[in-house]
Image (cartoon, rainbow, N blue to C red):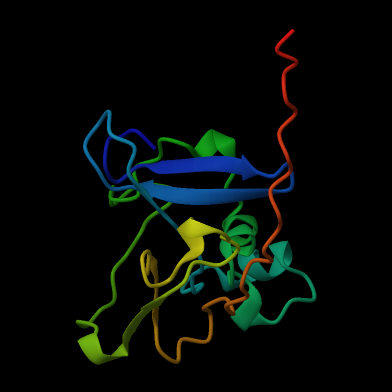
Length: 152
Protein backbone atom coordinates (compact mmCIF):
# COMPACT_ATOMS: atom_id res chain seq x y z
CA UNK A 1 0.00 0.00 0.00
CA UNK A 2 3.08 2.21 0.17
CA UNK A 3 3.90 2.25 -3.52
CA UNK A 4 4.81 2.32 -6.21
CA UNK A 5 1.55 3.30 -7.91
CA UNK A 6 -0.13 0.74 -10.15
CA UNK A 7 0.83 -2.23 -7.97
CA UNK A 8 -1.44 -4.68 -6.20
CA UNK A 9 -1.61 -4.86 -2.43
CA UNK A 10 -3.44 -8.08 -1.48
CA UNK A 11 -4.20 -8.82 2.17
CA UNK A 12 -6.16 -11.33 4.24
CA UNK A 13 -9.11 -9.57 5.85
CA UNK A 14 -10.51 -10.61 9.23
CA UNK A 15 -8.95 -14.04 8.84
CA UNK A 16 -11.55 -14.98 6.21
CA UNK A 17 -11.07 -13.43 2.77
CA UNK A 18 -8.43 -11.97 0.49
CA UNK A 19 -9.00 -8.36 -0.60
CA UNK A 20 -7.08 -6.45 -3.28
CA UNK A 21 -6.13 -2.81 -3.52
CA UNK A 22 -4.37 -0.90 -6.27
CA UNK A 23 -1.73 1.49 -4.97
CA UNK A 24 -2.42 4.99 -6.28
CA UNK A 25 0.11 7.24 -4.58
CA UNK A 26 3.85 7.81 -4.55
CA UNK A 27 6.23 5.25 -3.06
CA UNK A 28 6.32 5.58 0.71
CA UNK A 29 2.85 7.12 1.09
CA UNK A 30 -0.06 4.89 2.13
CA UNK A 31 -2.58 5.38 -0.66
CA UNK A 32 -4.65 2.69 -2.35
CA UNK A 33 -8.09 1.96 -3.76
CA UNK A 34 -9.98 -1.18 -2.73
CA UNK A 35 -11.18 -3.20 -5.71
CA UNK A 36 -14.81 -3.74 -4.72
CA UNK A 37 -16.14 -5.57 -7.78
CA UNK A 38 -15.41 -6.43 -11.37
CA UNK A 39 -16.71 -7.96 -14.53
CA UNK A 40 -15.10 -11.02 -16.09
CA UNK A 41 -14.41 -10.05 -19.72
CA UNK A 42 -12.09 -12.93 -20.64
CA UNK A 43 -11.46 -16.40 -19.25
CA UNK A 44 -15.07 -17.11 -18.39
CA UNK A 45 -14.42 -20.86 -18.24
CA UNK A 46 -11.69 -20.43 -15.64
CA UNK A 47 -13.81 -17.98 -13.61
CA UNK A 48 -16.77 -20.36 -13.69
CA UNK A 49 -14.59 -23.20 -12.39
CA UNK A 50 -13.57 -21.05 -9.43
CA UNK A 51 -17.16 -19.97 -8.69
CA UNK A 52 -19.17 -23.18 -9.15
CA UNK A 53 -22.90 -22.66 -8.65
CA UNK A 54 -22.62 -18.86 -8.61
CA UNK A 55 -24.44 -16.66 -11.13
CA UNK A 56 -22.05 -15.02 -13.60
CA UNK A 57 -23.16 -11.56 -12.45
CA UNK A 58 -22.02 -12.47 -8.93
CA UNK A 59 -18.63 -14.00 -9.76
CA UNK A 60 -16.72 -10.84 -8.81
CA UNK A 61 -19.47 -8.89 -7.04
CA UNK A 62 -17.75 -7.79 -3.84
CA UNK A 63 -14.10 -7.60 -2.73
CA UNK A 64 -13.77 -11.22 -1.53
CA UNK A 65 -15.62 -12.63 -4.53
CA UNK A 66 -13.41 -10.61 -6.86
CA UNK A 67 -10.20 -12.02 -5.39
CA UNK A 68 -11.60 -15.56 -5.41
CA UNK A 69 -12.65 -15.26 -9.06
CA UNK A 70 -9.23 -13.90 -10.04
CA UNK A 71 -7.42 -16.32 -7.68
CA UNK A 72 -5.59 -13.42 -6.04
CA UNK A 73 -3.72 -13.99 -2.78
CA UNK A 74 -0.83 -12.50 -0.82
CA UNK A 75 1.74 -13.69 -3.34
CA UNK A 76 0.22 -11.31 -5.89
CA UNK A 77 1.16 -8.26 -3.84
CA UNK A 78 3.46 -6.06 -5.91
CA UNK A 79 2.09 -7.20 -9.30
CA UNK A 80 2.06 -4.34 -11.81
CA UNK A 81 -1.55 -4.04 -13.03
CA UNK A 82 -0.48 -1.52 -15.70
CA UNK A 83 2.02 -3.86 -17.40
CA UNK A 84 0.68 -5.05 -20.78
CA UNK A 85 2.15 -8.52 -20.22
CA UNK A 86 1.23 -8.78 -16.53
CA UNK A 87 -0.71 -11.73 -15.13
CA UNK A 88 -3.19 -9.29 -13.57
CA UNK A 89 -4.21 -6.31 -15.68
CA UNK A 90 -6.49 -3.39 -14.96
CA UNK A 91 -8.24 -1.96 -18.01
CA UNK A 92 -10.39 1.11 -18.36
CA UNK A 93 -13.61 1.14 -20.33
CA UNK A 94 -13.38 1.24 -24.14
CA UNK A 95 -15.34 4.51 -24.20
CA UNK A 96 -15.43 7.44 -21.77
CA UNK A 97 -17.90 6.99 -18.90
CA UNK A 98 -20.56 9.73 -18.86
CA UNK A 99 -20.36 11.73 -15.62
CA UNK A 100 -24.10 11.35 -15.04
CA UNK A 101 -23.78 7.58 -14.41
CA UNK A 102 -21.00 7.89 -11.81
CA UNK A 103 -22.37 7.62 -8.28
CA UNK A 104 -20.77 7.96 -4.87
CA UNK A 105 -21.99 7.15 -1.40
CA UNK A 106 -21.23 5.48 1.91
CA UNK A 107 -18.71 2.70 2.20
CA UNK A 108 -19.93 -0.82 2.90
CA UNK A 109 -19.19 -2.32 6.29
CA UNK A 110 -17.77 0.86 7.82
CA UNK A 111 -19.46 2.20 10.93
CA UNK A 112 -18.77 5.20 13.12
CA UNK A 113 -17.31 8.46 11.85
CA UNK A 114 -15.48 6.77 8.95
CA UNK A 115 -18.78 5.44 7.62
CA UNK A 116 -20.39 8.90 7.42
CA UNK A 117 -21.31 9.24 3.74
CA UNK A 118 -21.58 13.00 4.05
CA UNK A 119 -18.02 13.36 5.33
CA UNK A 120 -16.54 10.39 3.44
CA UNK A 121 -18.40 9.61 0.18
CA UNK A 122 -15.59 7.28 -0.87
CA UNK A 123 -17.53 4.46 -2.50
CA UNK A 124 -17.90 4.98 -6.25
CA UNK A 125 -19.85 2.93 -8.79
CA UNK A 126 -21.57 3.12 -12.15
CA UNK A 127 -25.35 3.46 -11.93
CA UNK A 128 -27.08 0.33 -13.20
CA UNK A 129 -23.92 -1.80 -13.27
CA UNK A 130 -25.08 -5.31 -12.27
CA UNK A 131 -21.72 -6.42 -10.84
CA UNK A 132 -21.67 -3.73 -8.13
CA UNK A 133 -22.18 -5.19 -4.67
CA UNK A 134 -25.33 -4.12 -2.86
CA UNK A 135 -24.92 -1.49 -0.15
CA UNK A 136 -25.49 -2.78 3.36
CA UNK A 137 -24.86 -0.39 6.24
CA UNK A 138 -22.57 -1.59 8.99
CA UNK A 139 -24.23 -2.29 12.32
CA UNK A 140 -23.43 0.25 14.99
CA UNK A 141 -21.64 -1.58 17.74
CA UNK A 142 -21.07 0.13 21.05
CA UNK A 143 -17.43 0.51 21.95
CA UNK A 144 -16.21 -1.82 24.66
CA UNK A 145 -15.29 0.04 27.84
CA UNK A 146 -11.57 0.18 28.41
CA UNK A 147 -10.19 -1.51 31.46
CA UNK A 148 -9.04 1.13 33.91
CA UNK A 149 -5.61 0.77 35.38
CA UNK A 150 -5.57 0.84 39.13
CA UNK A 151 -3.74 4.05 40.12
CA UNK A 152 -2.43 2.45 43.33
